Amino acid sequence: MLDALAVSGGVLITPMSTPATNPGAFQPLPPLTGRRIRAAVVGAGAIGRGSHFPALARLAEEGETEVVAAVDIDATSVESFCAESGIPHAYTDLEQMLREQRPDLVTICTPPTLHRAQTVAALRAGAWVWCEKPPVPTLADFDAVEDEEGKGGGPYASIVFQHRFGSGSRHVRRLLAERAMGRPLVAHCQTTWYRDTAYYAVPWRGRWATEGGGPAMGHGIHQMDLLLDLLGPWSEVKAMAGRLVHDVETEDVSTALVRFANGALATVVNSVLSPDEVSRIRIDCERATVELTHLYGHSNDNWRITPAPDVSGDEAAVWQDFGPDVPSSHVEQLRELVVSMRAGERPRSSGTDGRTSLELITALYKSAFTDTTVRAGDIGPGDPYYTALHGGAPGWAPVAREEVSA
Image 1: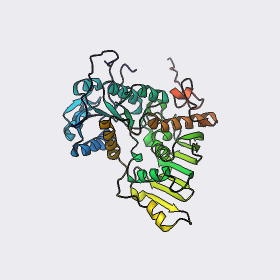
Image 2: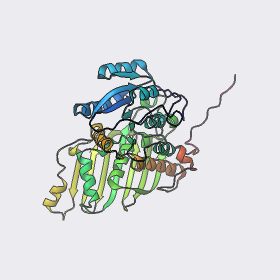
Image 3: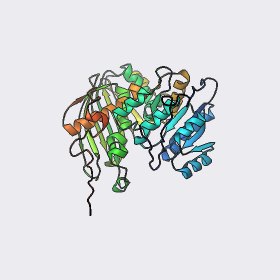
Image 4: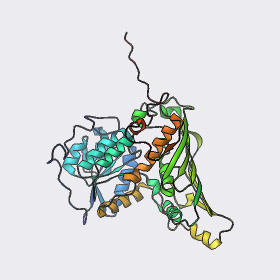
């Protein structure tokens, strides 16, 4: 546990009084039936202001939520955020906010190195958590968070994977689950984006300790998570990674071959070296090809289903009818999370379901850095990749800088 942690754009974590160390610190929250869910935003940066708060505000209009507080180590930033957004309480200390406001839901919009401590603090205070991706830096961190979740009825911690939500992904997920288009056979998943040298001039970027990983972790995780949500569990991965352009600790490009438990084979590419930017998933089934092409979010128009020549027009028309357009968004995921909270049920994108993409990314790194095939379930306590995505691999692990005396 961190004694104190502060980073720019983050939230101060001070030594925490929790039910484990101070049984009177927090009392159970009242039932969620018949009232609005009290929410707090942790992190007053771009993602908190631009994505989390607007989603909460939208649900507030529908009578579901109310934002009672925001937290950030930068007092000026959080006070301006609260003033602009009509949030009644601004804090620079997370535990103080949890103790005084007792929110039902805490949304975490801070750098990934802060996610474990902040999520644990909120769960111990009895609040559900909605945490931005990447969830936490390592599988060890994820498992520590899961150990703090409620054993029945919550609170639970869910990860923001908004690309899973919306009419397009829901329709395709159902078609694949029902095998309407036959077995899935071949898949391609690419996050090929472009980031210049100025982007990596920011000191914390491209560093294992502060960014958690390279494009596989920080950029491609959304498309990989969506691919897993559509195709189900993966069974093994063989990968390569490289630093081809940028002066970073992490990779700036990776490729992987993934076998799924259902037998499908996939290629995965994550890059920040690609001027023609695209996010893309393609799945070839026995009777049709499904393709999603977009960049940072998708609607029905971004999906295309191409039937095989022997498929009737009537059957293809059913597949191609996505229904009313509901774009992927934070709003759609939050709406489903609120339903789970009120029902006292584990939400999607939490627990084992939320862990699967982080496990695949960890295995991708281990495979690339050790030139081996990694199978699902291989990485656990005692494995160096369980506690660090670089695994201490020569040429990839951070190099300690020795001080030179005068």
